[in-house]
Image 1 (tube, rainbow, N blue to C red):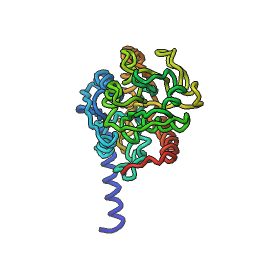
Image 2: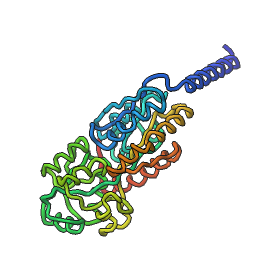
Image 3: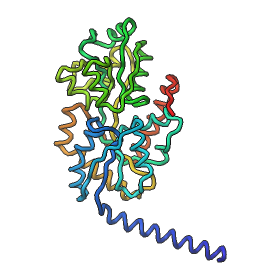
Image 4: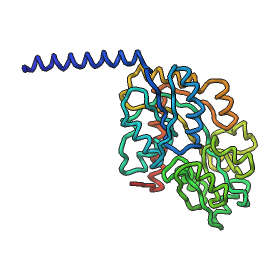
Length: 323
């Protein structure tokens, strides 16, 4: 075959592939969609996923199922989606900030979230709550710092290298506190052990943590947001308590494999925003301490890049590394 004929054949194949992709995009969705949550059931991402699945199903006229794939601090499920067929039927719903931390923490990450995944939209933001077991005799951050210097305290983290872990390290360094980190395999077990008094301190998303504060099983000392949360307006921010500019939290968002057709990404973006902004869902989440925050795909990718650079500095300073 001559070079000219080969080039013509390749061009023809590319044209047919593009036409096929366009046709598939026009018919999308033609089957059940799957939201992969890379954490155990009961955490912030799982709560969001199950809150929007039905509304999303109605918007797209297709079934939407939620599937938990926990492991490796969320990286197992993220890797699964990153390597899935880029057709829009498999989505990742996770803490986007935590995903941005992974490349700095893991020396051998099996995928590159910046290259293998792309954003669809952010869904909600839930600031971290700094809480302690009721037996800890402190009522604010200053007292906690002083107490930590004279007593052994265990700080529960959802996993080594997770967003709450890195936020705890940043707070410890900025406030001059001292505590020992105890890693778990998810936010639910970290909360359970702190409620039981096996660990004494926890930083975790407000969405999953607030109910335990409201029932008196945990004591809240501060919220890691720039401004106070109306739902708990009497609780001061960490920034107000001597750590200016401190802010952290869980950012739940949807990502899909890189290469997913743009028309499909835009359809997903529209359906997800319609679902999360539904009055009953927005109201329910607000009552649990989560704010609805939506973005365009490009805005979410930009957010991810900024978070990756921001937390890389903290990870490097604290020398947090995992294989």
